[in-house]
Image (cartoon, rainbow, N blue to C red; front, side, top):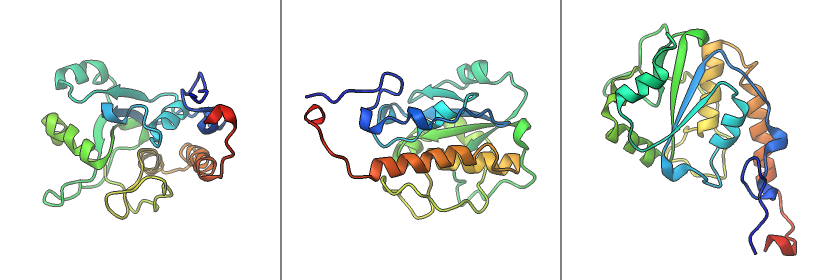
Length: 197
């Protein structure tokens, strides 16, 4: 029998996170580009992140023309940076980096293989300056395997970037606290009722 779903977050009732959402408006403008295969993934972090970030925008596409992107997002007057590890051959961006109100941050969401595919299919993304995370905290996201040690979930990486750009955890920490509560909920033993089977 199909498990009942929450009408707001479209997840099974046992995984509903609606009560954990903390509406937050950040100085940084966040644009999340999600690979289509990640949409609806049971272990994805973007649904909670976008519900918390009231001024975030979500793109779901495998390929997007640069002109179309700039028509939709390029009129803010902010500096657009890509939140993605820099190629070791190119090196890190020189400091200083833009502050929160100057920054528009493009975040790629998907497995590392799918995120790299977005870069391959949209080569104009490789021309964007990268926004490096300086000494990010370790990931708490143990329910989904990272490709390499030190890699963060989309939610964690975005929150780390917000805290770094705003020089404050005021806006990022409540989202991380909600995420921690959600992880505890997902890892807690669940008693199945007849309606869950």
